[in-house]
Length: 333
View 1 (cartoon, helix red, strand yellow):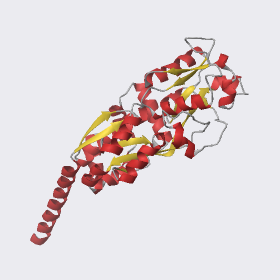
View 2 (cartoon, helix red, strand yellow):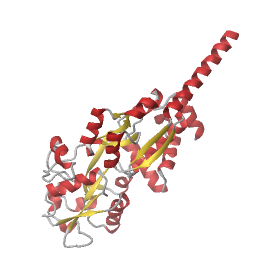
View 3 (cartoon, helix red, strand yellow):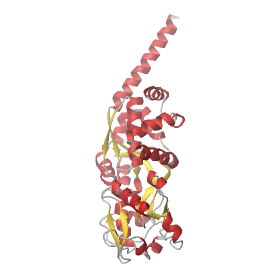
View 4 (tube, one colour):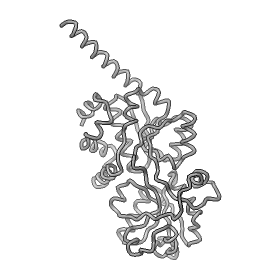
């Protein structure tokens, strides 16, 4: 009996030491939160799980796609980018992967990210001839510029987004200015969302850049325009994603692979349990849409949404984490 008790104590002590060692290895963690809703909630979820389940000391750092991915590739900071739309900065990410400063973990969105130029569904329904980008550009009167109604408006995202660079380049490639359209800088994510909401409230035309999954496209039904040309991956890398490229050609958005990127320096010290979590944590667009809709309806922060998700979806997240981490997380809710 004494031997059994001694063995049990030693085993418990070993587990405790291993857990403490894992926490010590994890240490301080910087998690990138891009300035859109799905990235905000995923970064908050990672922070909660790493801190509560694995004893890390994680904090969120807010940044945009271009500077964040560039910094990770060149400097290995921040430690984690939970929702990296890597095709927005393909050369930067590829360089970081090749040079070993970053590694890919889980595919955050297995369904992929969907980007493009959209119009309200009520405009598409009222104008069934509008299916492609070229079709829409024939009708600037349907998408009036609020500053100059004699012109059409193409709404872009804020500076710092990869999608903003792409839209600016495609604006040139599709000769949108010649079609009598102005490229509108919406200034912020809120400004972009607000322009769609305002158009919907007034049942006016709207044409611009957006993406899925998002709560907003769940609330406002939109129609994604067909670019009318095939995807040219080589041209996309050469020019469409390069802000100072002077000769962009017409191109189409591919379904974007969305991964979690991890700084190699952090992966080396984080411990196998933490990396096992980051290699498993993945959710569907439908799950994200519903969670973001809850956020919007409740005016909730990413932190509140992360906790709501953990309370309502134990069957999903418990598969991502170790049994010990799962117990700690459940006890904290």
